[in-house]
View 1 (cartoon, helix red, strand yellow):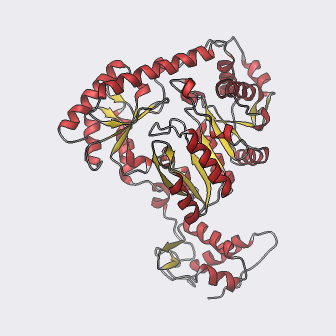
View 2 (spheres, helix red, strand yellow):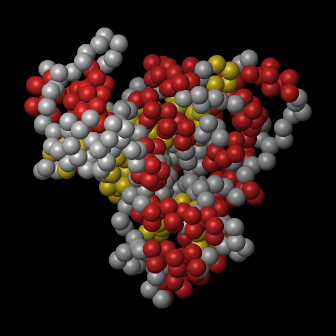
View 3 (cartoon, one colour):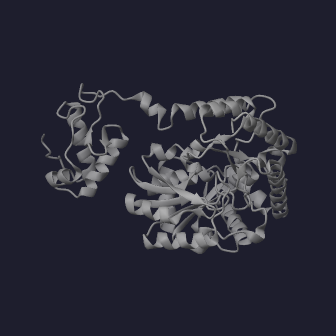
Length: 473
């Protein structure tokens, strides 16, 4: 096959190579299943760096045009490519994405079950209405919001950024400069922007295993490779992390070290310091998701965020959604100015506008003189519910005792966790998330105890004990 690539000044060379390969598949010069030259050989033939060919192959694989098999090399995807001038898009694969049918079916079943009376909803990752702090809002009209919008720039509403900076200074005793803060529509948008702006298809990201990040489709959609790192009682295992860094050229380490989702584990100070040192050695940035950091049961035992320990190399994500309700959708990113500029441009390119309304409402809440008292009351109420659950469950199950946040990671006494078992949980009216959603094979479930009142917690424990007696859990 002819590998003479048409080169133009306006088109990056990797795009020209991608176009050349795609056109030759379309016109039948490259046939389904046909093996392509190795990356090294192809780079020599075309006269480019091997890294260029690596990027070409990663993007073509993400589009489903080629496929790679260990030990067999790279070949044209064995479908309808090459049979006509206009290849047929595999809409089924595009819609289905990376999640298995089993995962999708389970999520659908849980959502349908949540509409029934009397179910125990330990699944939803939000506070119940009775725990959401109530703040009195000042009288305002439409013009007030229009006027407030004048205080918003590409990084968000300035008074809210200042209020967040003050909150962090009060709770964590360190400073997030206002000029280094960008408001987002919740923590998930913050992660989405980081993926879009800082990563390319084929990049490797190290995360904890288990982790809620496995449940986010945005990584699969962007072609990002996630590598799970085992955890112990102190957090992410750094010996395993270093192995992943050396094997897969990890570009970012992304984790939520405080009251981790789903396990509730908090990374120790010594482990945090060692993590920072390891990432500094390999020059790898850390993305710290601190969604639950404001919810310790005892502030005296709170461990400082990674951002406080290493302000320059940690991108910090915070959120108010776990405190004042998800409908407000307020999160933030603290990062170096150059990174914030890139994230801001990505948001504008994606047309992810940031409404002034939730920002003003969040600023009202943070500026309320009762905010700290209500936050302390919220922590205490969650702690009461968590203590009641753990006291009732006793020695019947193995579960980590979290020092804050919403979740309990309850390990089952069975060797596996199957769909049949999850069906039994649903039939018993227990809504929860299984370990495999979080990329883990350990038979365990995540329970949002903060969401349950005293009666619901009692019924939950009774039902779990009944299911254990019949060998379900």
